[in-house]
Image (cartoon, rainbow, N blue to C red):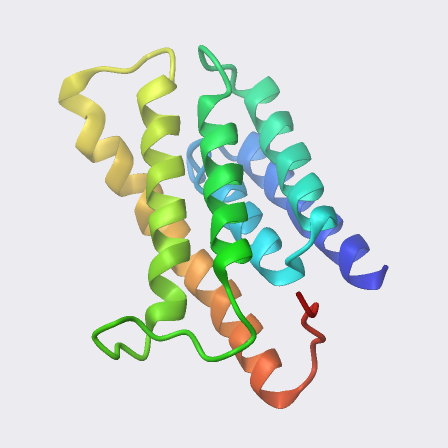
Length: 162
């Protein structure tokens, strides 16, 4: 229950920072990576509900055409946690950082859809807008996943048994 309350405060703070300083934190640059991190940290329905609520509040605050980015982000994150086993994650090539690749794909697809669905979308500004958001969100997701990985290694966090 304490982790759910902590994640609720983290996601709420990210929403507040995004609304309070839109010149520094562009739309989606904080909430989307923290939502992906929340789903991957909790690995249960509570994490999906918290992340979905935060993403829907972000959609209400920064209305786009449809919340397709919310749906795609949550579905891909659920696919990642449902395919995850308690064993070490390695890719077929033996890459040791495979635990970071799948969440990065979820983040990039969610942010790309978010940028494409923004009302003032222009093709000339697509790459610049996406790069600005990725410069903030990739380090936040990497830090969240690094903390989760470290907590797993030291036994500070229980992982659900599937």
